[in-house]
Image (cartoon, rainbow over all chains, first blue to last red; front, side):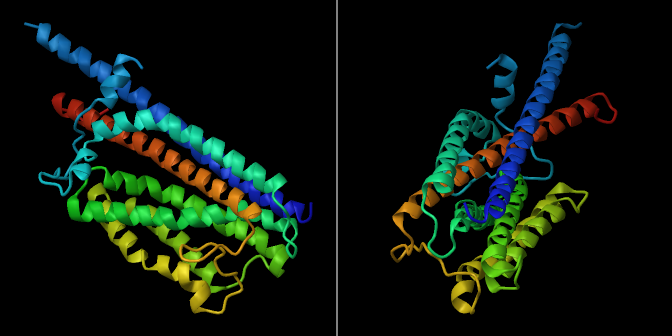
Amino acid sequence: MTHLPYIAGAYGLTLALAAWLSLAAMLRLARARTRLRAVEQQAGRVRRAARSGP
Amino acid sequence: MDTTTVAAEDATEIPVPGKVSPRRPIGGLLHRFANPGRFLRLAARLQPWLNAIAILLTGWGLIWGLFFSPADWQQGDAVRIMYVHVPAAWLASVGYVALAVCSVLSLVWRHPLADLAAAEIGPVGATVTAVCLASGSLWGKPMWGAWWVWDARLTSVLVLLFLYLGHIALLRAFDEPQRGYRAGAILALLGAIDLPIIKFSVQWWNTLHQPDSITLTGAPTMSTSMLWPLLISALGFSFGFAAIVMARLRAAVMEQRLRVLLLARGNASGGAPA
């Protein structure tokens, strides 16, 4: 294959950046979902405690 | 999916501080997706399909282009860079069109998701534009003998990269997010003038960059054995772009809701939010 370093560089860079973007998006989504779930659970507990209180 | 996840994605309204929800939006579709809770539910169902289609099509297109398509009689195997360069160039422009559409939705209809979508499209668009420029440079060196030339096509795409970066910077330049979104939307609309310049640069000026091989009006000027892997790769990249933006947008909507809940909790307890 002619010009192999240039071809490998172009494909490598593209795939590396695509993988980085995908991984960053997935991790951010998982982190947001986990934090939101924790806060909503906590808010639910506070609401239930307020309702059952005096 | 457990109950707490359903609760997060079933949220019907996510208030955006300082933003008025559209009372009479134009068109049912616009109104339908103005609801972040509905968007989250739909996006959660679409996401796995988008991911799978993107991976399959991109893999198919790139493997076909890299190993099974013919080499060019003049450029040799360097033409295989086309299978990453052209889809990246296509997405750089289409991503900016999406950014401009979101800006119109934000400025005219105050669509609650448009600002968040524009903020999430920007970094992804900037990355594909950088990929387009870098892969073009790697193609240019063996073909033209130079990594970079101040050619009209290359320069206008570089301007597009600066527009994306300017949009990202502008969104973060204000203490009040709504002002940043508004300034970013205006910049995105003004910058849209660069898109026809990119498209027609190879016709308006005498450029080193080759003219378009695929147009909407004429027959393609390349062999079908190269055209098919290119189209499949471009389709795969497009689905990949949509999948990444959708995942980022889902995260942004959840982060927005999180901020609102923490703010409400801070107000209720009379102190600063945690």
